[in-house]
Length: 166
Image (cartoon, rainbow, N blue to C red; front, side, top):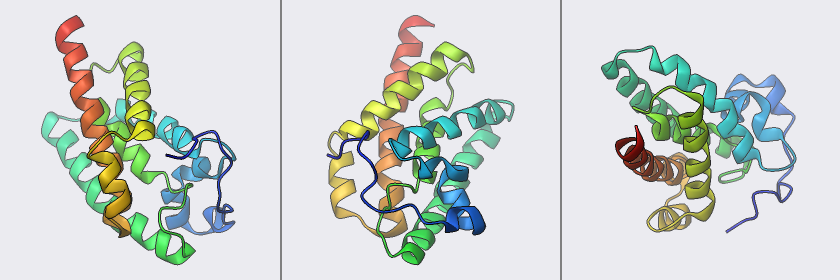
């Protein structure tokens, strides 16, 4: 497990400012932060939860599925172009992970903040099967899979919290 506060091992490419695909994969630049790019990417993804909350349930589900499928392509493309599998700065996967975590949550600050914390714990700690997927599945699908699994696990925890306290 890597230290999320450690500086990225791979330099951040300047293409995140000139290439729209790189910019999107790097969370509009959040992935270029010198410390904890995944945390910054998750923060960038959080306001979109409020946007998705205004959609009907089927629309929210469609956005999630489309974001995952698009993310497999996007993360794979950018990783190939950079020549680095799962560059620390690619944070589209963290953005999708927080969207999954917050699916069906009350769109209130306390719930979103708790969802943020639970997702980051799952993403950093990587309990099984998240850790297995992170080590064994490669390409765009692999980049997305561990964060999708972390998002699903965090979603389960959050739904239990909502059921218990809401």
